[in-house]
Amino acid sequence: MSIIAEDFLPDSLLETFRERAVVHDQENTFPEDDLADLRERGYLRLLVPTELGGLGATLLEATRIQRRLAQAAPATALSMNMHLVVTGAALHAHRLGTDGVRSILEDAAEDQLFAFGISEAGNDAMLFDSSTRAEEQPGGGFQLTGTKIFTSLAPVWDRLVAHGRVAEASEADPRLLFGVLERSDAVEVLDDWDTHGMRPSQSRTTKLHAAPVTAERVVTSTPVGPNQDPFVMGIFGAFELLISSVYTGIAERAIAVGTRIATTRRNATKGIVHADDPDIRWRLADAAIGVDGVILQIEKVTADLDALGTGEQGSGLSDHGPRWFLHFSGVKSRATETAIAAVDQVLRASGGAQYFRRSELERLSRDVRAGMYHPSDEESVHASYAKALLGEIGAAS
Image (cartoon, rainbow, N blue to C red; front, side):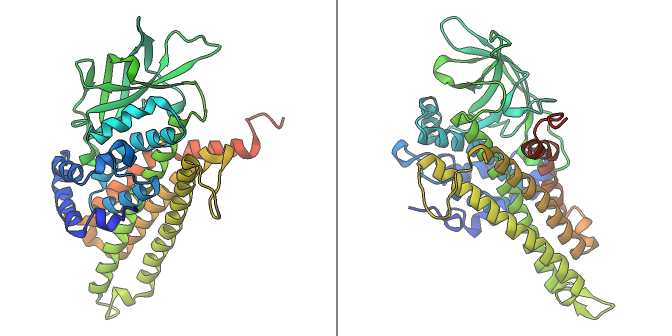
C-alpha cells in the first residue's frame, strides 16, 4: 500500500514543526521533540520492508515525504535524511541479495536511529576513499581511527555507519571497510556546531579513537575508487536524491510564502498589490518553473533506482548503466542550485522586511545555502561530466 506524504505528515504536525524550527534555529539546539513525533509515526521504519517489521515505503515515497518535511523544518528533514540514507542504501542492497545489510534494517525496525559518518576534511573522493584507518583485529572485526565531519544527528544517534581504508591492504589492492559503530568512549562527539544555517541539524565533528566494528557489524568491503557495490551505490543514490528533495522542499515553501506575501503587500507608487506587478509575477514564476523541473528529475531517477532494486521493468523506467552516478550527482547539483536561485528570487520579490530575523524567508535563505556544501559539490560534478565527455585530462593529446 502506498504511503502518501500528506497523510503521513499532516498539516497540523507540520505547523508544530514549523513553530519549533524558529526556536531551535535561534538556540542552536537539536529538535528532540520533532524526533519523538517522527518516531511515533514510524519514520525510522519507513524504508524497512514490511516482512522485516517496517512500513515498506519506496525510496520515491521517502523523497516526497522529505520534501514535505523540509517545507516545515528544513534542519529536521536534513537530519532525518541521514537515517534514511543508511536505511535506503540497506534497502537497495537487500533487494539485490546482499546479506550484510539485514541487521541495519532489523535495527531500524526496532526504532534504532542511524547516522552517517563518511565526510572527512579534504577527502574529495568521499565514499570512494578515506583518511580514516581501518585496522583488522585478531578474531575478526576492525578498529576505526580518524575524524568525520558534518555528522548530523550527532547528539542522538544510536548507530553510526562509517568507513575507513584498511591499513593492511597492499597498495596494489587498497580496500575500504564499511561498518556500523555503536556509541562508546572510542567515539568522541564534539560540541562544535555553530553555523550560518541548518543549525538544528547539529552536524557535529566525530572523532574515532580505535572505535570497534565487530565482525557481525561489517557491512561490506570495496576497492578504493568508484565501484558499484550495492551498498555503496545505494548510499550514493539515496544521499543525492534525498538531499535534492530536502532543498527542493525548502524552495517550495519559499515560493508558497512569497506568493502569500505578494497577495497582501502593496506597491504604494503604482497603487497595486504586488500580485499584480509584472516584475513580481515574473520572479515568482521563474522560481516555480525551476523547482517544477527539478521535482520531475528527482521523481524520474528515484523511480528508476527503486526499479533497479526490485527488478521492475516497464514503460518509463530506465537502467542507466554506467551513468547512474552521473545522474545522481547531476540531479543533486541542479536541485540545490535551483533551490538557492528560487529562494533568492522569492526574496527579491518580497521586500526588505524579509531581511529581518523574524522572517521565515530569512531563515529559509540561510538553510538553503547549505546545499552547496553537500557532496557532490559543483566542482566534482563538472569534473565527472567532463571526464564522461572528454576522458581523462591529457587523453586527447
